[in-house]
Length: 297
Figure 1 (cartoon, rainbow, N blue to C red):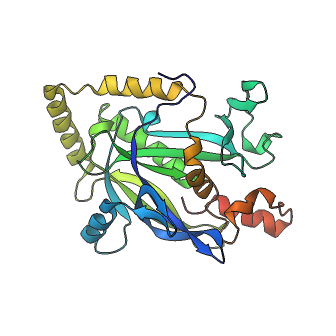
Figure 2: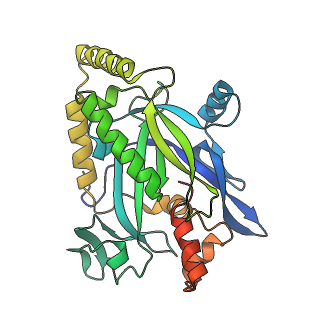
């Protein structure tokens, strides 16, 4: 195994909320109130839709606001990795990743491990560090070990998904990977959003099922997998070692996706020029930035 290269779950598609459109030669983020499933291929119009996007829309009758999923791993922290992350706005490459206690920072002499004071107290980040998470889920039965990735900087989404994953792991007796679940897009209004709707992602049991039904189904699937020789514990351990093999999870080839997802709320900013944007220190500017951090994702 190549040292320094994080071995991450195989990705066969992306889950996004909103898209990036071209206007007057500039690529601009545009919010949406539904999920979109895309492949990993882009053309001039943007990311090409994954075939599952159309089939799921037909099943829901229009807007895609819920997606049936399963988790790859029983350990919640393997399914969703959340860090405080600072990216180079020009290249999209990770510069510093921490957890509020310690961080890994790219330095001139290599990788350094330093204390992490969290974004609000970090002089190095200068306000550009954000909570950043990646959630890998299985959609459909075609590829049991292939996943779709949802990238988000939304505190609402990160906090909700982290809680749900822990809770489902607990109530199922450790059978999180066997639970029939569903990603659901929810909206809410807050004072900081000026009463306009903001959207975040939740994780619930599959539509038409109670929590008890889902646990019974998880036990049935677990028994079936064990009978076939499927070793969930070994799969979790392999993933754990893979993540630990590299300092940063995101690769250079993920740059465009990272930049688009890391700055999802700058609706009227040119992504290519974010590095040159001077901060607005006015009260209104600070409120706008706070709303941006609470935005779609």
